Image (tube, rainbow, N blue to C red; front, side, top):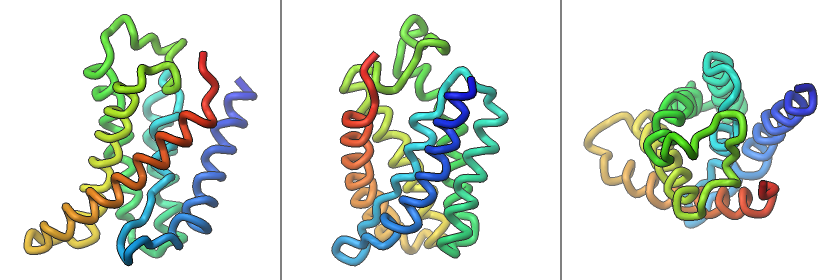
Length: 168
């Protein structure tokens, strides 16, 4: 338990640091920005308490907002995908595959992993950019930024999960 707690704490602090120091300063073509902190929701263990998970997800998003001066949009979007994560996993995987004690993202088949990452990332980005622009007159910009930043984020997350997660 303590080993798992230290791993979660390291991921929490590490993702805040990486997002604020490195990835918030990457602006490809002026508007494509990776949001790597979404990995927190993807990698958090399923066997833990859902209330704690939602609270920590909100706290992570709020920390990113604090350092980015973005007024709570990261907290809202991260909390949204943290809330839909379990129903999404149960719809993607059969009940037999979703064993809470043994489940890990790296054990998912590649196609389902890519679908899981894509749905969560695009949902996060749509909520994030909808709150950022907060107008239906900017729907083209919202979709454009969500799609392009989403593709970049999905590629980074998929490569990171494949490289750094141990196969079980």
